Image (cartoon, rainbow, N blue to C red):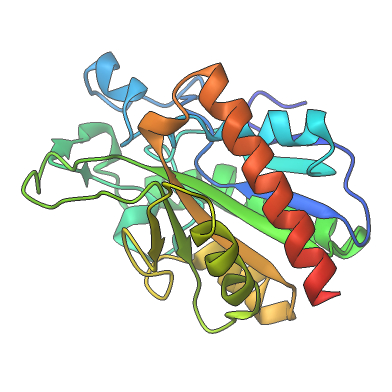
Length: 245
């Protein structure tokens, strides 16, 4: 595997099975990239979706997912869940943090996209075409509080996100809401109609059944929480496949 490869694959994709895709699963900064920020920031939500790699790994180990496609480069290096021409694809700021190493000229930006964004999506498209999944689970996590908007309450334990295709969300929302004590957001903490690039490209544009979820990061910050939520999401995926199929 190349040191610059921007993804890693857990398990074995299976036609008709469940594939987890997590675009922000890593805080890795490859050799040759200098962001110029406090190393502490690389442990925070601006750099990585905290906990999702562990949840995905548990799902594969438990048999709740056949495989997990995980980004292996920090979203601060290249956010693969943004359009190439979007400022956030190579962010110069994130939640109030300046990222001086991302103030690139057109050539530098093009090189960054060519190294990480394009290979990620090309390889993902090839994997999906070779093993058409029955369901894609787009797995993210969110911070309980944004530094730039501390007054904004984020009480949800999990949010369900989608754009135009609401087939899986319509099944997921009542299933999740039936779990006692769970606070479930419909298009929260933000709308999937705004931030849904990977699923728009690889699922909606191809008619593939998918579900986008955001789990609050403090609930999956340790192994116990990751195992708990892996079990829940595995059960949810089984439910969707059974009903939709």
